[in-house]
Image (cartoon, rainbow, N blue to C red):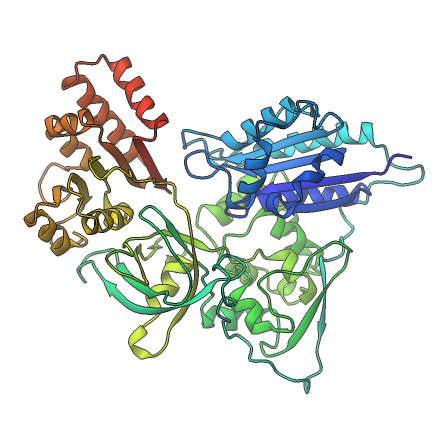
Length: 595
């Protein structure tokens, strides 16, 4: 009989694709498949030619880019020298997870599906395009697609005689066994962040423990939003970067939340344990020390502040001895209960910790060995670097808005990373933050004579501060910045710095203070007002950059630029649209937006 092996490979940035891949893995185990779930870059891609059955699950990031943990796979797959019959024995399916509010919706999944087909793969189903914008989220597409997928797979690989699909009522074993150590065994220095190994370039597996040098509020105390300019010392790390690059910061849970979690689950935070995989081939969690304390696990690893996903409630329902709680958990994990779950969790942004409070009988019965199946790991957060090494050697600065907002829940919602960073005070001792640097999406011109037009409302100005510092240090003029904020007196970040550069002739600055007059004025209005200069710079080969929040602003800016091309360049509306698209293709117009 043919071996029933299924490989599930995922590319995930925020954890949604990994969660979907894990779900398919659980469903495969119920159907008695030998199943491996791996990140695409952890998998040896040269083995793909030997695989018979693979499901790819991938997200799309930024401007249609693959997630970080599939970039090497992506480069390999698109090598020109791969023969067109390379994957002729492969049956495959691709599940994409995206957001239709972005222009390149599910671009990576579509491209992957097409490329595997070009290399001879046999698609079991059309590519599935999950959409975050759907009322029921990606599951609206994923649920029916998975039913169809299992029909196809079981037709190719039927169950052995006498075997049946394991009932959904049966709890699958955990990924790891957790063994508590005797109280009197030796204690290592737990919770200390180890610096990166000597000569190892800091990365997600080896972050550098950077010292926080300063943590300065740059908005007026009376302003509704707290924005910080934070500086880190990276001396001795081997970190190098240029304008447009990004610093990744690994946050941690606050001590109050850790204490609450341990109390709810009746865990002793100082108990020490080791993990052992329950199946061969499963690797241990990379960032957890062995042995480890419960406190370290909850503080540095378990994302107890994230909004829990459907899979959380599904697994939680297995531990429930309380009929009322179990019924509610089962409803939340059913296809029919997704609207209810959305109202309970996603709309008010309820955290995992808060959800556990709402199911106290179930929560106190959670076996500790299931914690790593139940709660995802804390993901690093990305920040545009707001400084240049040429101006500030061995330093990294970020411009960070502290995330805090109200929903219908009484307690304000707080961003995990920004709240943690804002709470740190380097004047009260040695404060260390785990970080590393990765290449960003914005690439600035090498030619010193190329002018640049930078459009950065709010904290979107961060990468442009790095670029301007870098270009000024190299003696480059031709820097034009459009900056927007609410009020000149309250959130005009880096004002003194910009004004000094204007005086010295290094910077042309246009500001839009939206709330300082009756009519709201935004950066797109300033672009239209200064269309002659914008056109002149474009005619001289200027590169245009845009960064900031991806709500209406990017569309409004694109329309303003098209209007410049029409009014000053004499192009028709369709020609202006095509001209802007051509600038984008040639990387003369680059955008980096976030939600």
